[in-house]
Image (tube, rainbow, N blue to C red):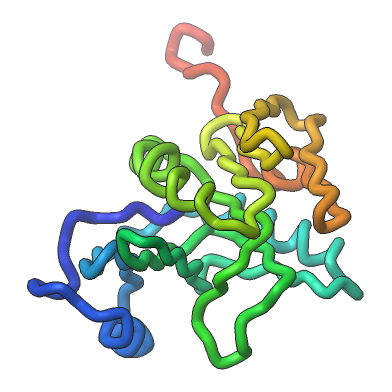
Length: 202
């Protein structure tokens, strides 16, 4: 997920309608949390490459399927008794789709966020809590940016359980959408730095 800043988009409580109207013309994305919109910082090339790889990998598997994959230009709307939130996940799969003119989805089945140190606290706490409250959600996937690892919160009959995946050979099964994601696909074209090279190694 792109980093969320503390800069407010509006100085007074903002209605959902005004947020959506403003966002349609905004040059910079903003996330909306209970009446306040926050400007988002940009992501680096590694982050965007992993997010694009996720979208491409899942999209290819969903051909002919009623489900669709959406990139980080599509918001997810989360409504609760406490208010409404809009976030921009790095990738999202939905099977019960909103109307084509909407700029958001209400019923994602899978949400994917790419985790960096700048976004970790938000993605692992605030957004995780909000995402797991979505009735339709079956899996929330948090993909590390700096090493080949992922954590999945998966819905079961007893509630969400947490699974860990490591190594490029690992595969994340998503039976709800008849897909699987391999970490080798997610990290295609990503170079990991395992050791620092200095003059002593020359």
